[in-house]
Image (tube, rainbow, N blue to C red):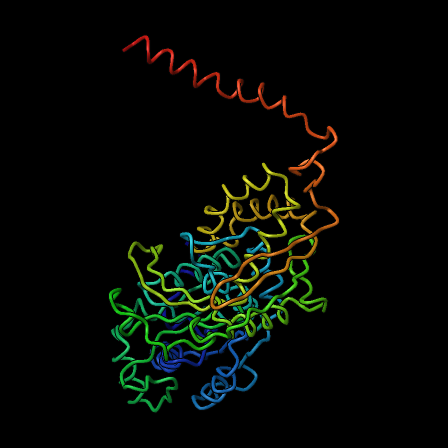
Length: 416
């Protein structure tokens, strides 16, 4: 153990809190002041959640945080460019469905939080993740990878405010304003939003038999209510990253924002999922990821004509491992970095355009082209190929691959 990790409560003079301005972190801000008697520096990452930002500043000021100790950093471009896009080059999906919208945001928040801690001379960092969830793991693995000696304060593992109702009572007692109360009363959904997705947990979603209420969804219309006419989008890729939409060059964050808007209007990207948490339990969440759903489909579309068969199959073999690393908080691990180098190598020729069709909740690739295409129409044609492919060659190929099967079948016949 290092000296910093062995610090007592009284040794902590300044702490940087990952602060959303929501119920949990607003309570934590006050709790840190009262229980640690330390100066709190708030850090709010602007990852595209929008309206939460200025209320977070107002709440921090209300509880005596110095203006110079309120950090609200616009990280939208960095988030999409350096975290979302590298993940999408791998086509990463956790447990076959989840596009990792919450998971991929945590390493960036941890990175900036550690940078601020160094800037202000803080001895500790703090987060609002519960002791039951994955985010505590993701934040803290990031902290320790970037600052091995940092002290971490995780209030959910220290206090007795172990329910949403208790948090609301604490907030009321201390005059902490709480937005997003549910219209029917009680605790709000536990929500997380960024440019990639918005998630919902808690309330009746804790019962997997209960269907999500339509009023819960924020970014997407119901597929049944989406327009009756499909829309077509052309997405251009350069080395595996989307760079243009319908011929217009865009920054990563702008492009994802546009795809969210268009996809949401067509009912794209809703997901109701029971997932296996890293800490050992099953958890149900609902997600909206319209732009990410479109990008993932389009990326696989351009890879289908530009990526070598075995390289593509190797990527598919590695994808679940990569996705688990992201889900479990190992963004900064040597194995993720090694996998990323391999994935990025495969993307050098993943250039071109893909046309997708959006219609009532579905995304379909309908056309694609690339100057680096591996699709050879003269070989693939059902018409006369002019000798480009000798079909007789297939006989030897089949016989060689069937040899072990024939040997096995003959051996089984002799034993019977």
